Length: 264
Image 1 (spheres, rainbow, N blue to C red):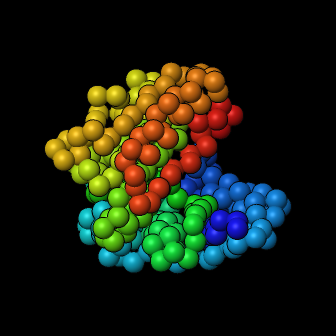
Image 2: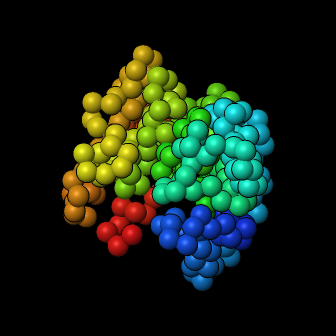
Image 3: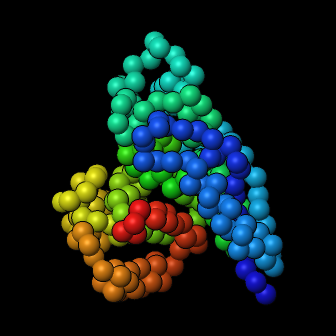
């Protein structure tokens, strides 16, 4: 029997524009949806397309502070009384934009809904086409990321007493997720990325292995710029399957950032 798979997407995800020159282009989400549709992914046996819900404020507050959530809401509605710099918004990586709060809550809700579908055994795999915003911190935006949907989805699994393995293949280190679970052994975080010696956010070195009860559960594989496919795949195969198998997670959460590809 084919694996039961859900694809979560809403066209509203592709409508928000941070700025004309910003490299984070939401239209890529629509392109991904259209590519999957063209390949018949939604029509395959046991596959379905699901319209995601918005996250609740309580879900967002499982990681982010109430003050930060309110700032995102205010800045996204054009409130000029709010100081953007207080939460790391401004020109450059994290410009506040109209509709920012709703866009962030929809992306986050999609990830949480994907987790809930797995928890309830509705599906065997769920793919949230938006999201993977792994840099956001509890009280500030970072690296194009407003709300950290991987962290919030993982916390949904933890609320059910589940152990979670998180595998991140984005070109940039998954610093926000590592930060969230650095001192717990309930989450294994593995990140393969271009070394922080050369690339934002400047973290993710091998010696970052966790703290306290989390020591040994944070794993980083920093790679040189221009790493070849052969070397990358060798690093992945030597590290990820063995650690995930040893950890025996109840759920696997992945961040599939495509900027590891040299053309992105």
